[in-house]
Length: 393
Image (cartoon, rainbow, N blue to C red; front, side, top):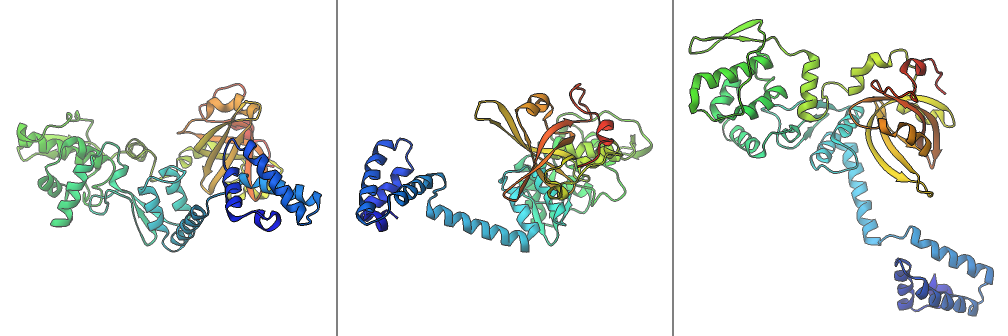
């Protein structure tokens, strides 16, 4: 524009472009503005048009971006979209394994399920260190287990590849001679369920305990052994000493193990664990949010991420992302609602949220008016019973 309308040389035009990206540019821009106005006037451009064109040039700084960067990001976008469409399991597994992106592992696994993918638990013969994807399934990698050491997993995978898959729990113990602390993590995460036969996870822990007792102090030292829990059946050691074996863990206990070891429940979405809390509540699912623009509605959600911000007057506010079983959605806590409910925002709990659905550039946001949780006792929050009687929209 500077060259065509104002007669700038290519060097001067490029310097003008560079100046626009600098923080302290007023003095230099003053000279270029004079040059621009003089050049355009000399070429017969009307004064009103010159003013408008110069304002447009000045606005360029708000969205200018390096062209090679733009091209490289466009390539990444196209390739990612292609992989997500044609290799969804492999793509999502790679995103999680690379620990990248804006969301948590839990959020990506939830999105994978909404894409129709099956999420498989960690398995002693099928998992690698990273997540893996094939067909319509994603396999959780050993990397997700808190406290599991990389060198131990590398040894496990090398042994499995060099010889054969592990045939039984006893085969694994004999071939790897693992530390009990690492074994307990694998057992409670369900990694041996596929080769344990009818032996329960508590039963495997007892076999681990029995192995140490039978082999004596010569085995590797661990971090202690579990004390005998209540029993319903018996397991006899090779030493002829009898030990009780507890019944299998309840589903709730197994879910708690998943939360402790993986950081989230794997067999169920956490909102499913609170089904009773939402019973009788009329709420709008995230997938239907666009149908309620301009309406005040009730939604449920699990907090995924949040970002603090300030208004132009310096008042604190917050942007948050929630999800339900149907999708992710954004919510805005303006200063008033943030003052009332900001202390309730933390992970690991469900929310019932009331707000107004707003739309801008085909993006939908819930402007929050009220929020509560199963454990919130603030007098300013609505109870679930109150919300259940309030019509959606």
